[in-house]
Structure formats: structure tokens, C-alpha cells
Amino acid sequence: MLFLSVIRDLPISVLVTSFALASSALPTVRTAELTPNTFKESTANGLWFVEHFSPHCFHCRNFAPTWEKLVVDMEKETPSVNLAQVNCLLYGDLCDQNGVKGYPTIFMYEAGKQIEEYNGNRDLDDLKTFVKRHAKDTPPLLKPPTVVRPPAAAAPKPKTSLNVDGEVLELSDNIFSSTLDQGPAFVKFFAPWCGHCKKLAPLWKKLARHMQNKVTIAEVNCDEHSALCKSQDIKGYPTLVFFSNGARSEYNGGRKLDQLKEFAEKASEDVVQPLEKSTDLEAHVAKNKVVYLLLHSELDTGILDKIRKDAAVLLGTPTIYSSSSPDLLLRYNIPSSVSWSLVALKDHDSQTPSSIFHGSSTSTHEKINAWLLSHRLPTTLELTQDTFQAVMNAPHTPLVMIAASTSKTQDLIEERFRDVAKKWRLRTGGTGVFKGREVVFTWMDIGKWSDWMKSMYGVKVSGQQEDEVTDDLDNVKIVIADHKRLIYYDVDRSGAPIKFSSSASIFSTVEDAASGKLSYKNSENFVERLARFLSNKMLGMQDYVVSYPFRAAFFLLVGLGVIFWVLHRIVSNDVNADSRVDHKTGKSSRLD
Image (tube, rainbow, N blue to C red; front, side):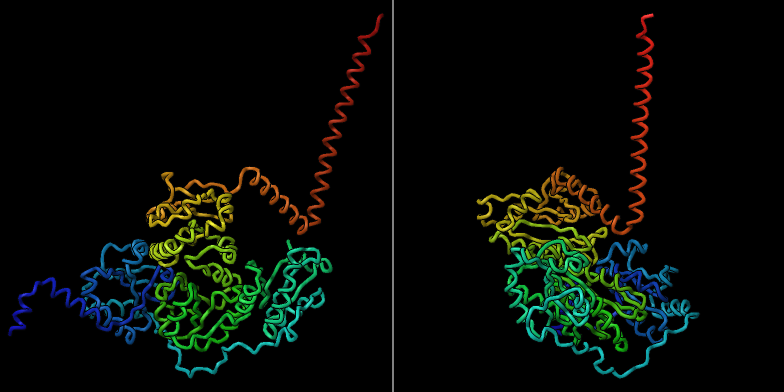
């Protein structure tokens, strides 16, 4: 009785909170959750009964047990209707687009179109009646038969032994293609008179010994095989290129032996690794900033070979883990109608994908390549000699925020950017993309890159500032670079420097830059921009002549003909004018 009296005397708020906490610990039914990345693709096929809710909504929490019971029952009674949810707290823009005015709001979708809103009572029988009314003319989806897990057909085929002697292979036009067909090859294009090539030669021999029986280490003398080097678009020496599965990738990293070894070993590994258990994914995501996950049917082992060929362009980074785990298919809301999917997981976050590519038999090599290259960058990293090319010259041209760091502020900047990146991904629904532009948050050592940052972005840090130990993040100088266009932004819309300590300042400036609402500055002066413009025009003309020689010859002859005709007219007019003057002069000079 004493216990009951104590309970009776407790405030109502305490009791409500206690029951809420207790109920949150109870196991719940896992309902497919749609995101801005998956909504259109998922609802495009079949019937979808979608609840839009907010975790903070009292009515939503009361309705949750009924919805969970509905999910369980409808899976048995009307399997042709998919039930899903949209969390409006996380994806407010998506809920606004869908016309959600309050919570919970439930719509029925068919073939991607919103066909009816449920306005009845929120009891189980009424909900079932509504769902079955829409499903009555829809045949149930056929469940695939249960099959025994096939043998390890997904394992990569045994590799042919390469570089058996551990020596550098000299390539010529005759054996170049056949060598690349045998397996991965790391090729150096050089000229004997090149000083950098001479320095690299002994390291290249050591690399060949280290990669014995693993990767072909080869070289091409461009003085002797100029046509071959021209066909590979070699513009300088030495140029290092890694070839694998028909893909060609130029190496722009460091040229120390350890760096070359690390690259060759990583690039030659099987890019698709099986995920032994679905729980192993957490360990891989915790270890790597970017992880790709290939989800597919157990029966579709052929997709592994296809992705291996398409992913050769990644050179082993990031690794693609493959799985047919039903738990992972459910976690990432992969529709049953999709043959296979690629999931990008970034920044040690295994719950919210930055992007999902739903594949099919019509997915082209180019589309898969483009997706793989567009999502391989983490949201935060340090710009160094090894990472610069991959970030600044990435094919999807991201906007890159660069903070000038010192040895004493680097840890502080890295920690701050990790927090900013998390907020940015939450702001963009997990993608990190705004107006089609991915944003990467980076920092550079101003001590090592001071001249470059000063010439490119006008960033100057005095020796006194570099030696200061300060927690004032506003002293950190940052710019937003659009490297492909060689432009940058260093102030917000009001003309004030971007505040490193203010997420609002950072996000508004990034969004204005991506939207084209912000004035930019050029990294080049007028003369440099003019020279680059003329150079691009000349290269364009050169490419046109090479591609269309007869058409170019025709236009040249027409142009010469026009010039000759104009000159002829000018000369003829001058001759006629002189004749008329002489004639007049002759008549006026007569004395009689």
C-alpha cells in the first residue's frame, strides 16, 4: 500500500515520462522508411501506403502500435501493397513536397502518383478496409521460391601469374594491348632525357621486384614509341598509368617507393569483397571514411563480375562489400522490384546512406562509373599532395571548403569540420549535395602550402598567427573553391568573411555559392585568363582538324578564297581609282 501511495503522489509528468521511456525499450516492428533519395524510385512501382509522421507528435506515438500491427497483417493479407513511413523531422522538405499539413498523414500511392489520402478513423479495421479496397484489383506479388544458397560462384576467378621475374617489362606497340589483357599493369611512360624519369628509374625497378607475381610493372620509351604514347594522350614525363579490366587511371600521388607500393597493392586487390556477416558492416564503416555496399539477390551472382569490371576505375578505393542479407536490404529500404543496388556510406555513418544507385539490366557501364566516381570522396579530409588531385579535379566537380590550418590548430579544425559535416549531411537529407553540387570540407597546412594558397586564394597567415595557440575559431581563414572554373568565394552575401565558428555562416555561403547568388573571385589574373581562353580555343581547333580533316580543309579553302576575293576587289578598286585620277589630271594640265 505504501508503494501505491507513493506512485499516486508522483507528478503526472514523471509518470508519463517513465512510461514513455519504458515503452521505447520494447521491441518494435521494422517498417520500411523512405528518404528523399529512395522515395520516387520506391513508389514508382506498385501500390504504396505511406505514413508521414514526426517522432515528437503525440498522435503519431499513440498510432504507432496500430501501424505496426497493420504492417504485420497486411504483409500476409495484401502483399501487393507496400507499407512505409517518412520521418518528417528528418526529411521536412520531402513532406512539404508531398503536401503534408499535419501528423500523422497517410497517402496511398500508385505508380509514383498520390491517388488518395486516408481520412478515416485510425483503427485497424478501417485501415485494412481502405488498403484492401485499393488492392482488390492488384494481383499479389509472387514471392521468389526459397532456394539453397548457391556455392561460392561469386568468388573471383583465379588470376594469371603476372610479373613472374620481378623485372620491369619494356612495352612496344606490338605487345602493349596483349599485356594489358593479361591483368593489372602499372605503366611508366618516359623519355630517356627526362631528369625526373632518371630519378624514378631505380625506384621503378624496386617496385617491380616488390610486386612480383602480383602486378605487371612496365614502361614505354616515348622517344622510340611516340605513336603509342600519343594514343595514350601522354602530355608529360614521367606519366604513370594503372590499367585494369579495361579501365585506365592516371596516378597523381607521391613517388616515394612506399607510396608506389601502397598504391599498386591497393589498386590490384579485388575491389568487390564479400561481406561474411551483415554485422561486419559496422566494423568496415567504423574503419573507413567511405564504404560502398552492393546488395543483390542470392541468385544473381553474375552482378559481381559486372561490378568488378565497372569498378576498376576506383583502383581499389573505396572497397565495395557485397551482400544478399535480408536485414541489410530492409535497413536500406531496397524495393523487392530492384535487381541490385549500390549504397554509399560516408563519415562512419552506417545508418544514413549518402546515395543509393538502384541497378537493373539496362544500367550502363558509363552510368555505374559516374556514380562510383561521384560518391567516393569523404565529406571531410586533409588536402595533401596525395589527395589534392582526387578532390580538386574530381569528375563531379565538388565545391571544396578549405581552411588554412597550422600544426597547432589542425586538430581543432578537423574536429570542427567533422561536426559541420554531420550537420550538413543532416541538412541535405544525408547526401551532402545542394543544387547538384557535393560539398567537401577540407583543411591545408598553411606552413607547407602558404605560397600556393596566397597565389590561388589570397590567403595570408603571418608567422605570429601561425605560432599562436588559440581556441578562437573565427581566426581561421576559409574559402570555398570551385577548382574547375578556377574561382573562389571568401565572403558571405553581406561581404563579411565566412565565420568558421558559425555553421549558419558556412551553410548560407555554401548554398549561395552553389545557387550562383554570390559574387566570386578569380584565382587567375586577366592575362592568365586570356591566355587560357586562347589556348583552349586553339586546342579546340586542333581537335576539330584531327576529327574532321576534310571538313577543316574545305573551310580553309573557302576562307582563303574569300580573302583572295576581298584582296582582289581592293586592288581592283585602287587601280581604277588611280586611272580616273590620272585621266582627270591629264585633262586639266592642257595649256591650250
